[in-house]
Each structure stands twice: as C-alpha cells, then as structure tokens.
Length: 278
Image (cartoon, rainbow, N blue to C red; front, top):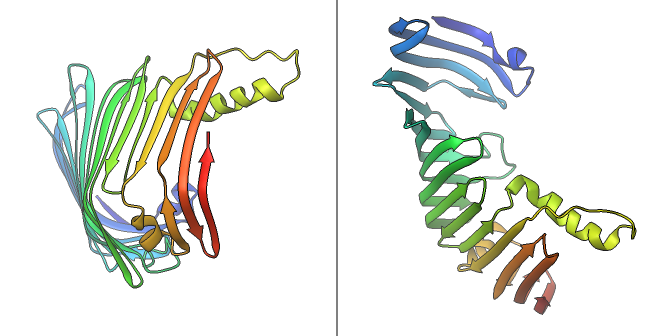
C-alpha cells in the first residue's frame, strides 16, 4: 500500500500538516474480524508538518502473542529520535509502555521556538488503566541535556508518579531541581472549580447557596536547585529562593490554608525580600 502526496492536512482540516508519501507493507491473520497477528513496515519518503519536511523516517507495528508493538525512527536535520511502545491487556487491566530515546531535537529548526533550543535524553512512560476512574502512571526522564545560546544544563533524573481512583488523586514529582506532591481526592480538572467555589463563599450574596463537594488536597513543594531557573531557563530572573510552599484545602469544613515563604526574588531590576504569604 503506497501513498503518494496524500494531503493529510485536508483530511484533518489542519493546515499544520501537509502531504505524505510513504510505502507500506503489511501481512497478518484475521479471524472473525479480529486480528490474530500482523506486521506492518512503513517507510516515510516525505512528510510535511509545521513547515518542516521529514524524509528519513520509518514506522513498524506488529501484533504477536496478544501484545501490540510500535517502533518509530525519526532521522532528520532537526530531530533524531526513536520511539518504542507496547500495549497489552492482563487481568482486565490495559497496560501502555513506551520509551523515547532522543539523540537530538532542535526546537527552532522544527519551528516550535523563535530561538535555538536543543535537547537530548531518555523518557520512559508506563500506565496501567483499570477503568476510566482508576489508573496508575509513571514517567521517568533520564540524562536530559538542554542547550540554549551560550548555556547548557543537565537534568540527571525526573520521576513523576500518579495514582487516581474514586477515593484518591495522588501526584508526586521528584527531580534534581524540585520535589512536589499533590495528594487528596480532588481531580486535576476540578481544582479550578474547587478554588472558585471557595472564593464564592466570601463574595456571593448572603442568600447564595454553594454545596460543599467534600474536596480535600495537600500540596507541598521543595526547591532544590533554583539555579536552573535563574541561570538557564529565565535569563531575567537573577535570584530565586523559596523556603516553604505548602497548601491544605478542605471544602467540607471550609478550610484553605497556605504558607509561602520567599526570602528573595529578583527579576531584572526588581528585588523583593522576605515575602511571606500565610
């Protein structure tokens, strides 16, 4: 199955995409309209995206022993990377595992940034989906090298873990730069409404009725290497020190407690010292 100058942008109604030319070879076995096994080998001769043209990429996919495999190789001027992924089900749980190996990606060359920014490293992703309301996931970033004009920074390790079910939503971030934790029963897409409802308790008319949702969460952040922000990420941020950043929220008991202590922050010529929000 060959595609020649297939207009992906027209199909998706998205002008970010252009034409696609590729060669595909597929073979497999199907029984009762269900695939038993298959193997797909695709070579991309030309693919247009975001004003970029990729000429040296390939995709392979297969189904073997009830496990789906996907391999993608990207080789071009601004990106050299590989993706390996698996999908399978075990004991009614859906598992997705993926690894992204980035030899080099240059975001200005991909027209994603206006200035030079290059990165390399390894990213591993795992998720176990029990249902729409319950899943567990982890993302690990290893040896992430970041480069911008005249500056370079190495992040040795970043670990993100999430546990979501009907009773709890726990998120943990551990890295060289900072650690953070958000635990409770408030889902991420409901945080904004939880805050707004809490504020409405004090701004609404006396006869307004706001039903408590029994939302709770605790948030903690520990800054470990502020120089990532001051020396690399935000050039105009000359100084940043965060001593404490904690928050506790309980919607049922109408409690919102926060403690933020910033001994010093300097942005351009503006210096603020000993900031405290309690």
